Each structure stands twice: as structure tokens, then as C-alpha cells.
Image (cartoon, rainbow, N blue to C red; front, side, top):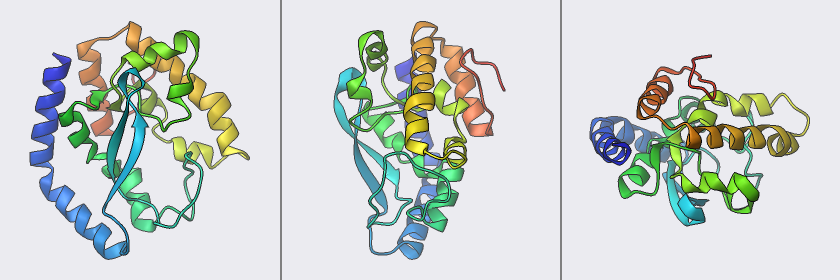
Length: 201
């Protein structure tokens, strides 16, 4: 049922959202010239296999920075900030779902250096296909704003947020429910947050 939901929803989503996808692509071309519309990056997927993720570009092309993004960074363009705030930059990931690289719900796919270095029981989250949304994504949907409030965003992410995301994703693995997936998708669309047990917070 999960695979059927993923494929069906991704195809329907790409068709229904095509006007938004087209308008966003045009805005990026106009407001952020000199670079690609679609951002491509290698991410760690199911069983640790690398795949290419597709997102709308939200940063300047010449940026060199951490894999951890913080609200208000100069490398994030004004248009990019809007796209990231409303998660519009992630809509092309529906293509990843349709291809089978990702699921609608699951752990967010990390860049090499994080998920591929998991140890012990934490590696079991690699059994999951990465998702556009999930329990950790919903709890930390304001992650960039949260990181902007600490002195060392990279350290805070590595020692506080990332370990908690692993805990949430392991809980999801062991307490999977198709209807919880539906609930998380609804909360993602409506802008609500959920804790690891699937309750709105």
C-alpha cells in the first residue's frame, strides 16, 4: 500500500502541481539568473545507496558553505528563502518518488558523511526509503530558524538535532502505520507539526 500510495500520489502531484512547478521555474530563471533551475545533489538512500535528489535551486551558484542551512544566510537568495519557507523547493522530489528513489514519508535523505556513517542499531534506518516528509521533518520543520538562534549551528545540529532525528526515524521504522503516513502527509500540507508518536504539537 505504501508503494502504491507513493507512485500514485507522486504522479497525480506532478500533474496537478505542474502550473506551480512551471511558475517557480520561470521565477528562478528571472530572479536568479546564471545558474540552473534545478539543484541536483548526491544523497544517501535506502541501503546506503547513493542517488541524485532534485530540488528547485534556492541558493547562489557560487556559494561554498556547510551542508547545514541557517535562516538568513547570505547564500540563500530572497526568492530561495520563500521557496524554502513554504517547502516549494522540495516539490521536484516528487520525481524522485515516482522513480522509486524516495517515498512520500520517511527519513530525509542526508548528504554523504552523515547517514553512511551511522553505527550499530542506528544503521537500521537505512532500511527505509528516504522521504519528502516524515516524523523528524515535521518536528523540525523550523530547523533553519532554530539553528539561527544558536552560536554554533553545525555543532548543535550534529550533537542535538541529528541524534534526535535518528531516534524519531527509528521509532517510525518500528511503529510503521499506513494511516500515520496519511496523517503526516496531511500535517505537512497544512503546515502542522507532529511528535514522534504522530500526535499534533
